[in-house]
Image (cartoon, rainbow, N blue to C red; front, side):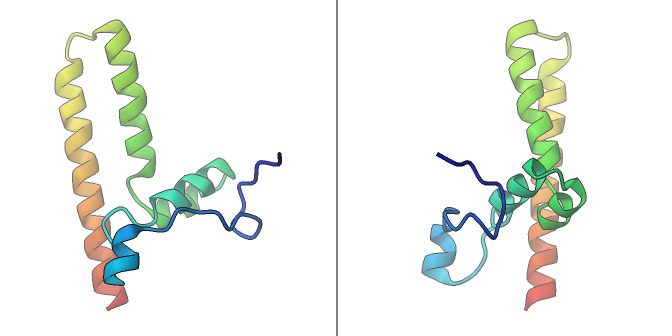
Length: 101
């Protein structure tokens, strides 16, 4: 079985159910393509596609490490990461809405 991380070779991306029903992008649209671009080694294009991809991955890694090592201010840092990701997702969504309408 061949793994592929290219848009041309992979046509098996999950379709957004919100977009399929409402024909309008949701706040999460672009995350899957952004992850694929990051796996292909194109971080600049990944950030341009979806701003919160790298901070979100950083938050998940930090959360995993916090569960193992129980850092002193880990919970406060996780709340900061979560707030930052929510802000980036919201700003990215507003940017998409205002530029594509």
